[in-house]
Image 1 (cartoon, one colour):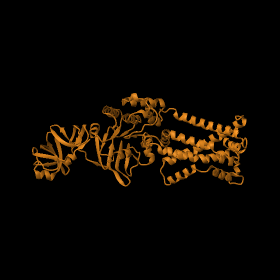
Image 2: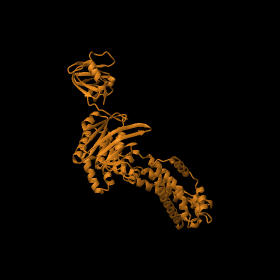
Image 3: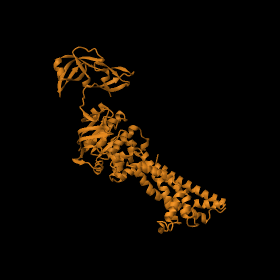
Image 4: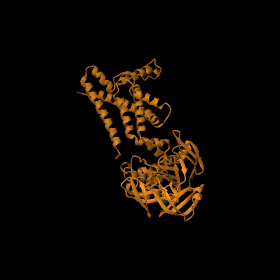
Amino acid sequence: MLEARGLRHTYERRTVLSLERVTLAPGTRLALVGPNGSGKSTLLRLLAFLEAPEAGELTLRGLPVRSARERRAARHRVTLVEQRPYLFRGTVLANVAYPLRLRGTPRAAAEAAARGALERLQLGVLTGRQARSLSEGEVQRVAVARALAAQPDVLLLDEAVSAADRAAQHALFAAVAEEQGRRPLAVAFASHLLEEAYRWSNDLLALHQGVSVPVTPENLFRVELPGGGGMQPVAIGGITLDVVCDRSGPATLAIPPEEIVLSREPLHSSARNTLPGRVVRIAEQGAAVRVTLDTGVELVALVTRRSVEEMGIALGTRLFASFKTVAIRIF
Amino acid sequence: MPVLNAEVLGITALSLRIAVTATVAACAIGVPLGFWLGGTRFQGRRGVLVVLNTALAFPTVVIGLLLYLLLSRHGPLGGLGLLFTWRAIVVAEVILAAPIAAALTAAAVQSVDPRVRRTALTLGAGPLATAWAVAREARFALAAGVVVAFGRVFSEVGAAMIVGGNIRGETRTLTTAVALATSQGEFSLAIGLGLVLLALALTVNVLIQLLQGRDDA
């Protein structure tokens, strides 16, 4: 439905995006993950035809979109909800009816459709409220309802539910999925919450400094941070890790596979976490090898083929997995 | 003290006619110009804004003089026969008020949250609908621009005196009448006319305030 090839974009001579190919087919729920400044928002603005890429081609329904006029027409079919969406002065209903009014729908029909869109997102109680009186989370959800009311082919969400609570996020994504069941709709959403991304997407694009990077869904753990600041001991399955974090409460830990060092003997090094385990899986990944170690929880380490050969790593081999506390990412 | 006699009413009516006509014309020119200046990036935009802001402080008598020279019988536009008519005053006031409308509109548009434009665009608005969305969000600041433009026009005396000639029954406005009455020592008439001027200015502002306050929580 929407496809981008050879996309390049720079701001002030700095390349902020360089992607070979992004495809959004009907039914797609593409999660864009990556740290702040990784290019997620830039990509979404380009896909929304709000800016023209410096290089590359965007096609919508198989037709290239190049000129300003073509972008304007394309914006009728693609809509973006920003991270901090803007609601116009007036009521929630008027806001949600706005895209339909723009498309020439008579007021009564537009408002009826807007009410429907609000109901589907369980926002019916907000219908008559003034937009200015809403909380940040409510604004985000109303903005999604407004975007859906536009009946787009492609819906782009830039951290669009970050301020909503858990139940609201659930309602929102469920409504989006339901909409996809009803008609052809492609969705892309940026998120810094890996868990959210994994849960709601059926496709994933990880960005780092504007380029696509392979995503590693391994070594993600839901944990409960005890709090207390500085170094915290965190229980995962049967093991305990040291984590540096000021937060407390539920969080997602990620241990990047390339940060894990495997050794035959326990390491005496600055790596505070050393766990004994048994190799349960070995798989090739290009020139590297993924070694899965059962340490009480399964940890995947990415090592070179040569290391595997030199260390004689095989299924059942007993090894130690070591990684620095600061290598653990917390989401 | 018979202040509200037929002559005063006539002067008042003429003043309002000139002020309203000039404000409407000035806004018709200045508001679109301000939208363009406030919403578009182009080479030399800052220069245009500097010129515009200078025009805000333009001495009214200088405009009056220039226009007098243009419109006088031997001037380039003398053939129009506008000099010493109320229309000449309107032209002068438009020249004075259009930059105000343009500068304040540009400022109003620039102060609008940049998300307004993006939001309208991504929801499918064309250029006109996008400008309208921006105008709706900026309507308080835009209305302020109209009020200031009206204020300039309504209270202006120098240019009106020069190009209108303060002709009784034809181009005598409230301000020029106050100036004349004062110079002739008719202070009670001058004060009376001044009060009418103040009352009208107040009324217009109150009306616009009410208009703004409507439909906004």
